[in-house]
Structure formats: structure tokens, C-alpha cells
Image (tube, rainbow, N blue to C red; front, side):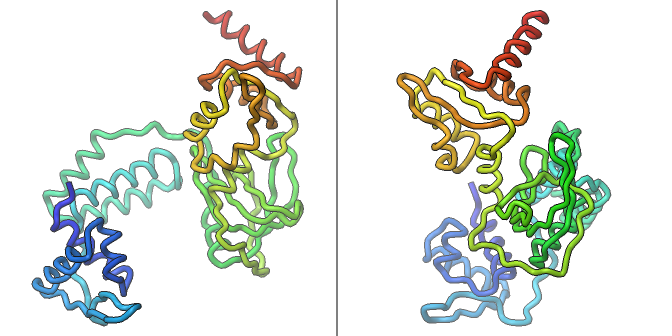
Length: 319
């Protein structure tokens, strides 16, 4: 249960970071009613925090201009959040920069109270994550984040899963970290369409002086999900699942927050559901099928059927 003191400190941080905030906005962020917000404001004023109240339709609360807050004060829960985030960054190779991670942790230990340092030591000593051993493409992040923020197009070299390389001119709209990999989404001038690329397949990335305007409300994560499921790959695939449409959709919803992006890949066929998609890698697709909780029959292509039989024979020989 969140204590009132924690919410008051959170309100102080919000006013410092956001400037003017309406009572309704504060109430929503803190999960309290407007009357409680006014009480929290009074608490801050009682301890000497100067707060201005602006009336009217666009009014709200703000700190008096020029007021300087004291050094950062972290709650126990906030320390846990920061330490778990640092642990995830280090162990999952999100940034591939352990020096920076260790530096942040050292600075954190210098500014927090003594009793909270035990939280850092406890988390460091008791929590482990299995790290990703694959390259994430972190070394491209600095260039790409600058390009995204500045809305600058880039030149790059892309290597396909088959090893083919090609020059691309690309407008990067956003970056996504998914399953141990970094991706960039945006507009590919070669294909004249939106594309998502894995960063560890890119090289020779350089910003140009050509500016672009991204489309309104572009969601890089959603586009990546759509690309992973709907991209036209080398081999067309058709699979019949021994399940009803609602059961398949319910299971698939655990893999994506935008299930509507996948619905047109599945069609009810009698008592079963047919998936029509494509793949570049039969072995990956077989492993994906094996994880599903439904019985299935591969309708096409014959090469996928053969790959499945070979994989099944290996498993039988190992048993």
C-alpha cells in the first residue's frame, strides 16, 4: 500500500519536472481524488515549499519560479526500481556499457541515505538475470537516437538473413528493444515503404543533412509487431490448427498487445483455423509451431513438411 508521505514526495517531483499541472491531472497520476490533492498541496506548503495556484480553465499548481529543490530524495520503492532497471540493462546487454552502469550505481549510492544503501546491496547480491549472449546492435544507438531526435535521414548498409548486403537510404522514426534485439522503424527509400530493421544487421550508418517529417502518431513498436507477423518472406506457409478461432486469438493475444494486427492471418475453416503467413527460416518456424498448445497440420509448403519430419526424427533418436 502506498503511504500518503510517498504520494506527497511524488507530487513534489511532478511539480519540479512538469511545471504547471491541473488538479485533475495530479489526481489521475497519484490515484487520488481532487480533495486529497488539495490536502497534499497544503502539506507541501506547510513544510516551506512555495506553490502558486493559478485559477481558470487552464489553471493548476506550479512551484514558484526560481525555487530550487533540495538534493534528490529517493523512497525505498524508487531505489528498487532504479536498481532492477540497472540490473536489467547490465545483464540483458541492453546497452553493452557496463562502465556507465557501474558509474550510475556508484553515484546513486553517494546520494541516498544510509539505510537505503542496504536495498542496493540486497538487490545486487540476491537477484540474477540470465544475460543475452547475442549482439544487440547497441553500438548504433547513439547515431540512430540522434537521427531520430533531429529528424535526419541516414545512409546505411543492410545485411539480409541470407547474407546479401545493400545500401539503403532511411528515415528513422523510432527505436524498439524486443527479445534482446534493437530495431529501428521508419521509411525506406529503396522500397518506398515503412520498414523495421534489426540493428545488428546494419553497418556504416551515417547521418545526412536531409530532414524528414515522421507521420503523425507513428508507433515503432506496433509497426515492428506487424512486420514480424506480416512481412512477405521467402516461403509462403499454410498451417491448419485443430482449434476454434477464439481460442487461437486468445493465445496469440499473449504475444502482442495489438491482436487486431493478426486477425487477418487466421481464417476459420470448418472445425479448425488456417494460418496463412510466410517465413525465411523453416527451423525457426518449426520451433514456433512446437510451442503452440494446438495440434496442427502443415498444408504447405512441402519443404516445411520435410523439415518437420527431419526435426521429429532427430528428437526420436535422442529419446
